[in-house]
Image (tube, rainbow, N blue to C red; front, side, top):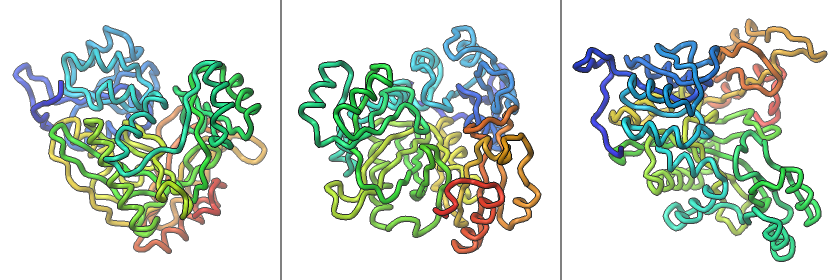
Length: 410
């Protein structure tokens, strides 16, 4: 289905069923989607195999089954008027099945592109003239012959990063290589699966843009946020005017909107960019990857904007008008991994929330996960304030109290 009548919150159909929105996946993104939908007056349904999932615990309905279970998918379709997904690695076939009877946003074809770095980069290249940006130089390696060809003919891609085509996120499935020999060893280490070798560029920063696009092609976006990663995982997001040069910010927004239009996208899309050194051959901005869903770097919008990324996700999938979000406060978001729950000796303990929440402008969001583990995303802390300087001061203090990484980048 490509069009749909609006699903209004609080409405009841002829059979007495309340307007219900569904989501595949029960993690923190699903949880925050459920909160946004319920705040508007929708009932919600989550399909997720984990009985204690963050989203399932707060939803009206929790269908506890696998993402590819035909009976579970049929139940979700029966309950819901529109359906979305909270992560890109849901089986595309599940989305195709649901789309036979219900509006699904984003669609299976778009999610399939985002699931595969080879397809993703081909899409970025195909719309480069429209978006005004391209991806870093790269080569596809699927076979020993392609590996040999890259070793022989593409020395320009070294040093580079070898990335698996599928299932790579938060720095997983990536190996940095400097020589042809290291490339061969890295490909073997990754199991000889389909990969992309991407040239390493002289980066000065990373940023992302969140775009929402409706069934009718209406599109709105947030201003770009600057992101700091530690060990491949987002640590800090800077969201305020001046966090990057205005010309580059405008270029990133325009590129993200163009990419969404080129995809025929419906829902919330995050497009991530590299900011490269002045004088490079890439015009200051290179598109890195996209996520067909709300994104960690957009969590600040819950507290710093009059409409969050999750509000827009609800509006887009339900066919409601998309409000242009307005940011009312500068903000910094600190990612909270499970590491925060362990002291220096490795003993589990509760973080010092008393001290953190005593700081002005702090907004704590915990995801309801049952167990803290090192590297596991457990929550985030957003700091808002009257000006950038005060926000940075509080963010530094909070990061210090929690022993968070990335403190030097605040």
